[in-house]
Length: 465
Image 1 (tube, rainbow, N blue to C red):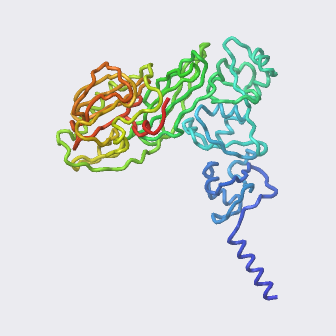
Image 2: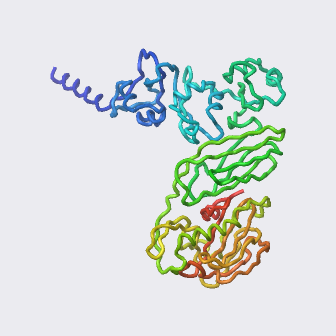
């Protein structure tokens, strides 16, 4: 008997240490959530925008409780909403209206589910809570728009629909609420694409998928030939160029000291038939995590924030012109001979102190090893747009490669090209020196994209269109 009691006590203790949450039975009122692989109670509360403590209380569990995939949790605070909740990541090209129509969920329900107070909160990558009658979330497939002077009946005939399907699917009061040019959804299997843009715009993307201080982003829009596209990333305008007639590309850099947090990404333009489009959505800027370094024995007359800003502004006048001719194809080459191509003495983005100053400065390029008089090579085909001497960069050459991309070669002992010269990749354009703000012979190499100095290493190890 005592043995049986001891076994019983042991079993109780075992289950108290491992306390999984099992599906609630006889749940009434409010939505539920089905636990997915990798979920924790904390991440569920965060993604569903609810109180962690209220989630625990509603399901009679504690912070030590474990959960297993398939567990059904009751979600508190939403008693007038029923169904199964799910989570999707918001991508660029979506808005509250497009998400509402895509998933056929009323906008006011989405606002309540996601505790939205402003459209700004639907930034790229945020978790969006959806609700359905069951676990599956159905997407209304195809995007359509009423053309100007086209009736809803004409559009319905083209799409083989009952006209009222357009009204119901898009949560409108009647056919009179359907506005020409507005993005609507119909059920179908076609890819839905970016929901806030007309159906003719098949894809909007950018690479890499995150915006990081000091790096280059490539924006790509797939749209009909003859579409005009403009845009901006924060205060930087985006200049789009046609790659194949249907792919429109823009390249833009982010400053190495760009403010962290959110900034607007806007795209707008006109389709070939004259239909306008526009969309703005917030994207997040992440830290480049650049290190700090102290440099001494720098000529004191070159250590000045005002002088640094003045020289950067002067060079930017040459580098902020996005010309339509693209001179390069393929990868950029190292601007020094092969034996020095992987010998670097300082990297882009490093926060710098000169002669014991504060860390008011950052390194705007990539420094290559080099002996006095060594060859400097053009890293890609282009046109020389500037040669001259600057207090900080010393003897400097700048080359335009087209589409807003420029390279700069600084601290030269000798410049071997003239403004207006056309150069090929690998051409000798100068000699290594130590002019300007320099403590010894080396090549300071910069890449400018969209009028901003970016990490040159990206252009050595990656390919850009």
